Length: 181
Length: 121
Image 1 (cartoon, rainbow over the protein chains, first blue to last red):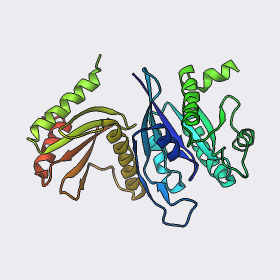
Image 2 (tube, chains in turn orange, purple):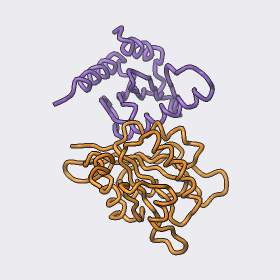
Image 3 (cartoon, rainbow over the protein chains, first blue to last red):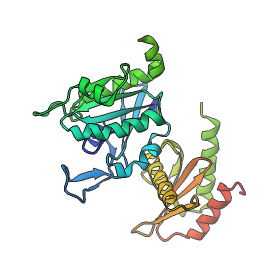
Image 4 (cartoon, each protein chain N blue to C red):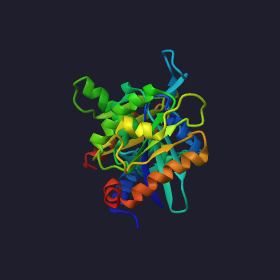
């Protein structure tokens, strides 16, 4: 069986842990209570981990990074050997995009040819939302990189996101895709 | 077909397990990217999860050491509440991670690990 390592990264409260838990029956939990007042009470301090069986021949190991910048030393560690990554953003939070910019810059420099997708998450929530094209412009996402509206709490939406990335990986990454365009 | 690496690591941990005379309940070799390479366990053991978490621990320890301007570490022994030890060693760009029985002969286990991981055994 072919095994893929996919990193799920993004700012605090973007939905990384939710994505892993939605897709994986069993998952590793390193959530701890948030010390300072925040929009949520728990946060990931080491990693999220889970395995998704895509079909009979393929499975994905999902490694979720902690979202808070003080844990940025783990981005490099957790990204070793990754086949691709998902950058998650909270579509209703402008701060989330600003934080995502730093993370995206880090991975664009440290893993420039690694296939990736941008997930504009929480698309189902009412109120202010950024569109995929807005996020593409703000983050200066290249045209060959998919930017997808996502609902991490929904299994089909989460799986579709992973499948989009797997297609990129199986095609041979961004270089091949750029040539196609 | 199993790779030479898998066979080598599998033999290594089997030898360590036997040489430790029952003090180890589980031992595994995992890669730095969190992939399980080989394991041997007498307990319920989920190699994929252990490998992912061990890689994160290894990375976090290296980060702390770097922040303290200290040299790289040789071994990690974590005493658990039931007096078992979680042991982690760096080995050829991999991690060897093990769990002992309660109140183990840690000196003896260290000697065995040092002998096998330095290639003296």
